[in-house]
Amino acid sequence: MRRVVVTGLGAITPLGAGIKHTWRRLLAAESGIGSLASRGPPFETLPSRVAGLVPLGSREVGCWQAKDWLHASEERQMALFAQYAIAAAQEALDDAGWHPTSQEDLEATGVTIGSGIGNLDEAYNTSVAFHESGYKKVSPLFVPRLLINLAAGHVSIKYGFKGPNHAATTACTTGLHAIGDASRLIQFGDADVMVAGGAESCIHPLAIAGFAKARSLATEWNNDPTKSSRPFDRQRAGFVIGEGAGVVVLEELEHAKARGAPIYAEVKGYGLSSDAHHMTAPKKNGEGAFLAMRQALKHAGIKPSAIDYINAHATSTVLGDAAENTAVRTLLLGNEGKQHASEINVSSTKGAVGHLLGAAGAVEAIFTMLAVHHDILPPTLNLDCAGDPPEEFDCNYVPQTAQRRAVNAALTNSFGFGGTNASLCLAKYK
Image (cartoon, one colour):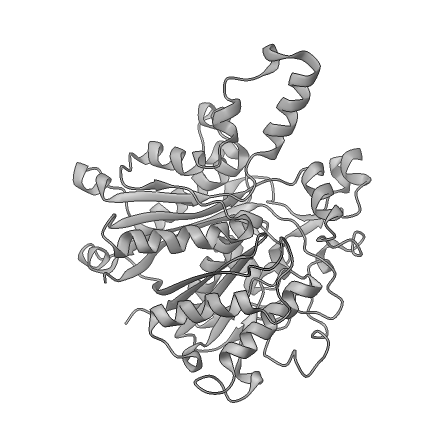
């Protein structure tokens, strides 16, 4: 089987436009979560009024404005989630130094970028306009701006990549599925290089209303937004919606070595599973998460004892965090695992950025790749007192402050509505 390595990283997140700004602020324990109150009456009446918003401003200072990344015509054609994807892909390709021009290289390069919800704004606004004024108010760009696969499509068109053109859409597992699927396309010879990740921008009153009705969102911290996302904490009470994109360049090992590309980490294993249980709630014993992680380790040929870090999906919900915590302890304790729970290093970066839905898995995979590359564990913000009962929440959750640790192998997890789960095993390239 062909080996797959990571050679380029790009991200647009609530911590900044660009992976360097994002990573620096993450390690400094800064928060990208703020209030939605300034966005007007539709948000002011909602039970959850906090979100992880991409900061606006110049690219030079790590903020977002479309004109820094796109021509005006491109901006008009693309939904915001696709704009984020284009920007993150551009950063990742520049980072990898991969700008092919030959027909052979273009045919060997593909794209898989997904989104969980896509362009909700377009669907809502066009529905209202059509209801009020009929056919004449429907834009010819309505469908292209609506389709989730257009993020991958736009990247392929912009750079002329003629390999696989694919889009995952599996709720909050989307970004990790996209990267995992892309790695397998390389392993099986369908491409030598894949541009892979997830993008999301649906901080819309209707989306927040829907998640709030499902009792999924944090509602108790509207006056103190940076404290609202609390993975593994005893006071956690729901996730914080966020936006952004994460895109990586994956490459067949020999291809990367031949051109002297930088290597951040190797993709060692990819596991998938289903809870087969409930639309939104996991099993209490975390069986689905456990099965995905176990499968990732099986493909990697790595024992549980060799895992130095897990970037958890942990969104800050009562049930979800507890189930994943149980799954992690079941996988890594005893037999071929750790001897004590305190040896298990697990953190959730959602404390800093919120839950980026379809982009979450890709952004968190990037954080895990950087953890492996730099031997540093990103922190779990707002973890004042680990969940209840304390004897079951006894791992090292990297509370509040980043920690220097050797990270030779790591897992990153993503789970989504419908019981869909994925886990990716990453390791230092040797």
